[in-house]
Image (cartoon, rainbow, N blue to C red; front, side, top):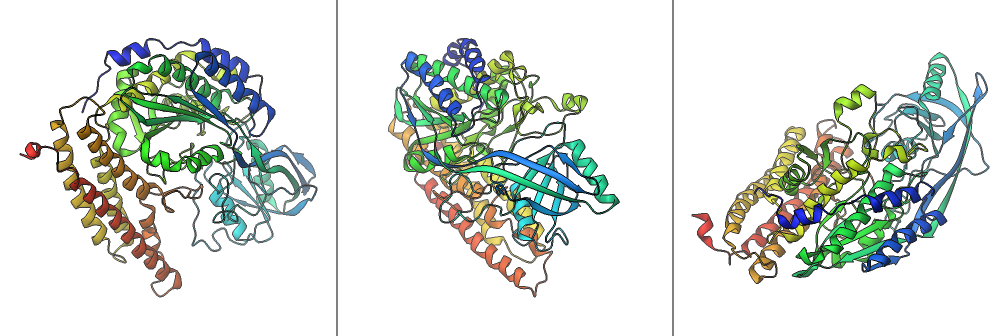
Length: 596
């Protein structure tokens, strides 16, 4: 279905202004919005004052969330030549305090632009003889690799930045604050980050002979009360149902491009949605999180825990707003969205700013703390610098700031922001959200989601190379695909445009429940109301272990473990697909004319 900007959308979008965003960024550049800090509280209350002035209903929660805040790192090469190297430590590293860690350095190459947090549970001696050594490797600090290195006996790990900045980050594998299932999952070795030039000098030294060094790390870890802004803009027809729009308040250093511009955009959208609330058929909830980086999404995870049942019942979609409005970021070719909203997002971007777009499966990142509930999701990072310009500038991959390499560094300052691009990004967000809250039938195509699942099953089947049969789950997926085609053919025969119409509400309830089932099975291992670890999540994670089978000895213990895991996983996926088919049978009240 092709959607065009109607008069409602035009009247809202024409009101976008930059006065408030400029005021917010001018204030934020004077603050270091580290979670748990006084500056974070000042920033939250500064934003809340706008809401007070505009008389927008809101609350500031103060959840106690678990944080790991880096304070200092010291690294001294002791041989063959003594020298000190500028270093930082990532969030969730082990804090050595006053204790020095001494050891020989071993260099293990990696891809310089490696952003993967993957963890291999079957890995043994993956990195060779590293017991009692300090590992030097390329790329950003990542969770899975740090965990594996610790399991294999390394004393610590040093990550070499891909460029001239040392980019702040985290190696935490626990998503949000820990519970009994995750409290012992964090990496158990300290980590450091150094610049590219220092790193390459160390590599050269390691290749020439034995290198030794000593280091210390200092972090402040514990539970901190942090401000979380919760805004409510009520719709006119089905006010209990809402889109959740959100972004993080906290930053590394001043963090103008990540995520000061996001806060500016969220506040401007709050102003406009509230001003035009009489045009909204459903509600919009806007949340501004603490604990994004140093808590590994602890603020949004607390929100998902605190309001989990309400989110399950009433949230239509969740939308993340991170790093919009950054300089040179004119491309929408690297967006994030789930399969069922691809057409919605592409048409919205085209209509809002006249740009073609491409979207990809959302990473396990970006405050996507709602996958376990099964909420359809779109957007994470916003526009980005076009690929050809990145190549011309010699930029490497970063995780925000519209691809500007000041990301997560002291240089993420006012020059990274661009008000004209911020207006474009706000248009994209508002157009897409308006189409969700105002469309009589939710504009989600789960036929595309199931097509993705079928492709995934066939990929895993090929990877298994005959060692495991996926016939059960493949049959269920193909039958569901056929039944969904019939379901969507019927929907145009619902003639009402009133979202509170009983038939419209019943169909939308079925659509949301389809999402609760399919999103959960495609993005979560642990399932409802539990949070998976902060490591890469493959498609249909219950079945992804198929890649191990052809590499294992069929007589080995590990091989039998994988077979058992896949059997249980296939049962869970097949059971979920059967539940969706039962949901579709509840739509028999819709005219059968659509099938003729």
